[in-house]
Image (cartoon, rainbow, N blue to C red; front, side):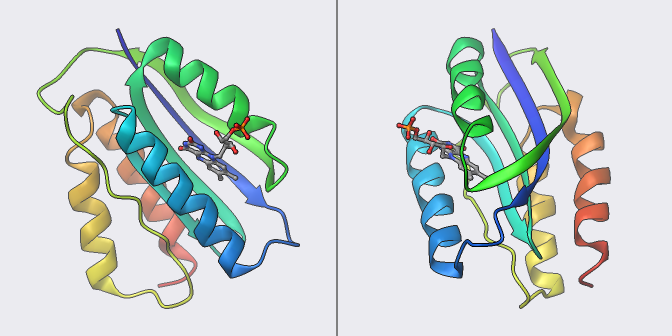
Length: 136
Ligand SMILES: Cc1cc2nc3c(=O)[nH]c(=O)nc-3n(C[C@H](O)[C@H](O)[C@H](O)COP(=O)(O)O)c2cc1C
């Protein structure tokens, strides 16, 4: 069974931009090697993440993420089983969002979301809009 998790969190204020980029790069590599799809964005002190993957793998991963001291106040948006879809093999690109926001980036995020499981797309789109609202 595949599983999906999404959350927002507050980045540890002590994190440098380099350290944020390192967390994003590590996540991208590990997830791509474990057939986990999704998106991870950083914007103005907050992270927004969507993860899709094999259920137990994902539950173990979210346990690690939640105890990571690089962020706090992890608020789960959804956490549920999802049907397998044609997107299973898709390897996500993880995108770092920072002050250099532009509309082109937003289109990229929307394209990324359209590759997620249909059962979670609409809520993810809604949150992405909220997440980027403050910086447009
Ligand atoms: C906001 C945030 C998102 C993360 N997302 C992932 C992720 O998607 N995949 C991943 O392998 N690690 C991710 N990590 C890193 C994990 O928290 C953890 O450091 C990593 O799984 C290695 O675990 P270990 O130190 O227990 O070996 C993330 C960290 C942060 C701060």
